[in-house]
Length: 470
Ligand code: HEC
Ligand code: HEC
Image 1 (cartoon, rainbow, N blue to C red):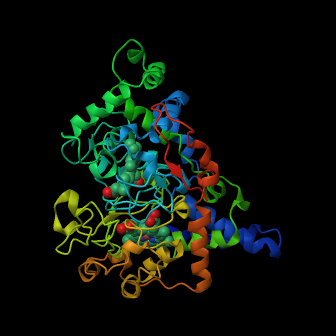
Image 2: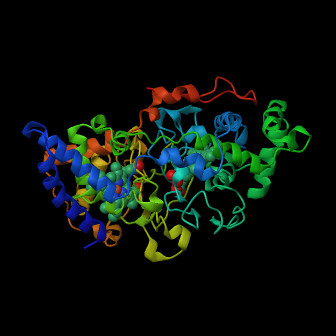
Image 3: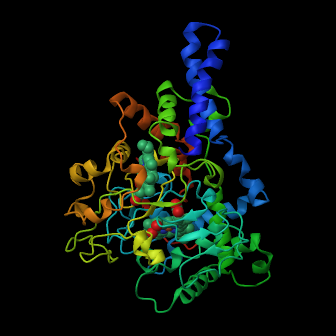
């Protein structure tokens, strides 16, 4: 038996006795028991609900509002995209907690709209939520950007990236500073195919553009004295202000955090029961971990085959993709194998962190489900779910409704943790969904609270993309 299960069993068996001895009256006893069980469970997993308050201490400094503000302007300015039509915010959108508006991201040659009506050629995967990424020890669906110390705030073991960057970005203070070097160089995301040259040449061109805008020189100059004294803006500075904006998007004050800090009425009874299933019988926490290096993010930041239906843009469609998918039929995603080149890693993806997931319009690396309850139900019995999967009833976009990529080889590698179906009653299932959907949601991640972050204008004077807020 795994250690955490054993600990949980002991706690669950002792907790009711303790509560019975101290319960003031029978009517409140069941509430007290539930609260007590959940508190003990969270304690056993080392969940404190206080991770947000550790940010500045782990950075070793306070956040700088001037950097946050400049990072925000760059987030929404297409000046950083050599194709002139996309930027971070086109995919990491405040309409969806700084995640995608799509099942599979649309990058260059889009219609300048961000929301349900975005159109253009698709890339390969869904854009993850940036909120709380400051606490992720590895980034991307296949963890191809990682802090080798398993701590994103600690560069001493290096930050690993695929070629050509590899370990060269390890001098930067945080994994997100290093990550910001990559998107501007992605041709299908923002750079386009016309500019000649490698990643270094693309970055140099982005910097030429920034240095040619007096307003950017002024704003960078306020933060970096060298720029004020005439030195050019460089990419370290770009990464630093982008990362600072991302640090300002740490929102971990969900009902589960408030409960863990002692506010027992922050969660409904149904969410509490759902949480006990998540950490208990349904064993979601085996992968969606909270302890230690998981930084209370509900992910082990490791890779698993969970058998997600292989959907892909259909060729010949106006929005047919501009990335060639894997496999003989070019309708597969090999996940971790793309990084390690080891066929044993085929179809493995990083466990999704679950905070604020309810703000996403689609789930899994390819958005093959558009309702969170469907994504959760899928885990309970993967092989029967694969057979029942239908992209039309899952309501994915029309261009993604073609025949699935092969599923037999995926199921053959299914993670042992998901081989045996998990039995839940309808009521229990509803509680589990309630917990994931609402118990992990910080109100600040809602679109109405993020709307104010879209600037009316940006320093380059280019038009700001059109965001379709609900
Ligand atoms: C074309 C859409 C698109 C644009 C534009 C874009 N991203 Fe992303 N971003 C993605 C996708 C898709 C992924 C996941 C890709 C993968 O795993 O293969 C991702 C992943 C990330 C991650 C890792 C998140 C995680 O959960 O691991 C960070 C951080 C990030 N992007 C930051 C940025 C920044 C900063 C910019 C602008 C400089 C940017 N992105 C521009 C689509 C985009
Ligand atoms: C074997 C490890 C494992 C277990 C156990 C597990 N998950 Fe997952 N979960 C994953 C992985 C890996 C992904 C991402 C898969 C992908 O997109 O390719 C994921 C994705 C999800 C998503 C979609 C999130 C998103 O942003 O797309 C939800 C919701 C989810 N899991 C909830 C649960 C719940 C609830 C349970 C317990 C019933 C559970 N998971 C058990 C590994 C696991």
